[in-house]
Image 1 (cartoon, rainbow, N blue to C red):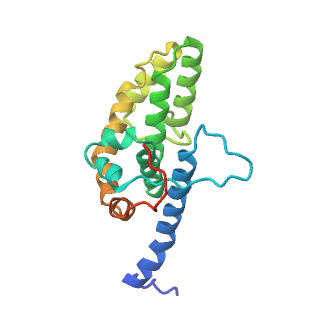
Image 2 (cartoon, rainbow, N blue to C red):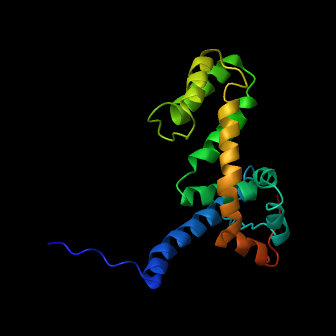
Length: 192
C-alpha cells in the first residue's frame, strides 16, 4: 500500500520554488542582455554589456500596461514572467498580431494570417490561446482574404486578459519589485 505524500512544508516549498525563480531570473537577464545590443554589431572579442533598466524606468511600467509593452526591457521582463507562469503564448500572439497589422503586402498578409492561425488559433495549435469558439470561427473565415483587422477581436481579448490578470501579478512579482529597488551598476548604460 502506497503512503500519501506529506504536505509540503514552507522550507520544501521554498526549495521547490527557488530553482524556478532562479531560472526565471537567469532567462530574464539573458533577454535583457541580448535585447540591449540588438542591431549593434559587436567587435571581435568585445564583451556584451549588461544593460538593466533604471529603477525609474521600471517604475514607469506600473503606470500603465502600455508603458510596459512600449519598453523593450519591460516587454522582455513581462515575456519572461509569462513564460514562468506557462502562458507566454498570450504575449507571443499579441506581438504576432502587431507585426501582422504592419504588413503591407497582401501575399505576406495572407501567409502571416495562416501562420498565426495554425500557431495560435486552431484546435490543438502548439501555442493555442484561450478564446471562444465564435471568435475562432470568424478568424477561420477571414484569413483567406486577410485584412489587418482579422485578428482584432482575439487580440483585444488576449490584451485584456494580460492587462487584468498577468500584469498585476507581474507588478507584484519579486523580480519586478527588485528592479524598482535596485540601482544599476555604475558605468552601466541605461536605455529604453
